[in-house]
Length: 142
Image 1 (cartoon, rainbow, N blue to C red):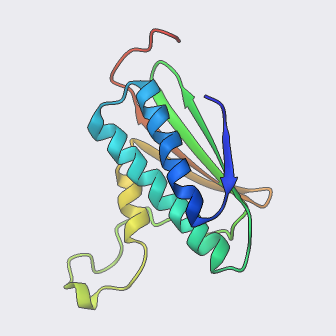
Image 2: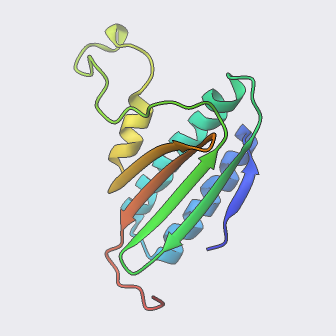
């Protein structure tokens, strides 16, 4: 698929969602896998816009690329927001009552759990988030 670059603003999130939906359709993902991937990408994109740009007093873009092959759909998001460490492990106190839990980290953790593989790296002043969902349908194009 062609790459997509949008401004790092909340208004762009619906465009990002449409791009991911188009990629999941083209990849032939079932509804459940499609929904989970869209949720994961939306969570990370929202965090980039909110925390990586707006709260940090920065402006920038979100650059997305969807790659479909015979085995998987891979979506990457690159941005120039602040660096961070994604919450790969469950946040502390997850079994505690809501009023006793610390704020933050749960959305990213849940997003990552919704895809088959997730990778984050910081290189050249850019964050790169990679989401991989295994395809259960063999591609006739690749």
